[in-house]
Length: 162
Image (tube, rainbow, N blue to C red; front, side, top):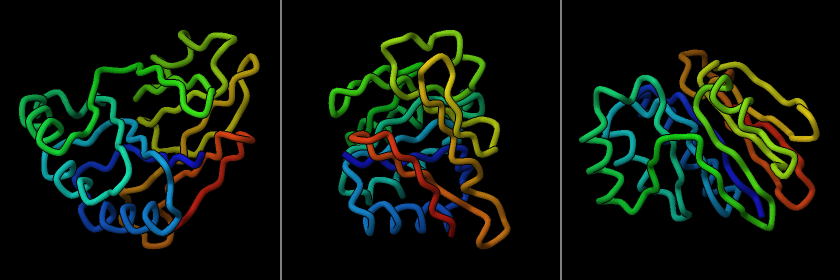
């Protein structure tokens, strides 16, 4: 099972179009947005994805919560306060926006922890759990934006730049 991971889109619609293209081309099974969606129009654009989208709120989403909730409901997108715990391909995963909210809740049974907030790449092991943040996806420097792809069968992470 392949999941696409990104976050901190901050209304950058051109980047969101590219992200949708990448995840569709790579045929990911699920997509995770690690927060800071910021406005409902972002979820409207992400509704073009043909696979399930799972999102957690970020610190910059608080002012637009009612609109984000309406857009998520309209498009069938899961949008919740983090941390969100899911099990996909028999792998327990914890998802949060801020790593400071994620790390204290990581438990020995979690194989993967995903976060955003920092806009910095991170790929490390903490007490047996792989912690991954692909980094910046909505910056202005072409070729420096990136999304993450995680193969849940072998816990292999990769970055695709755009």
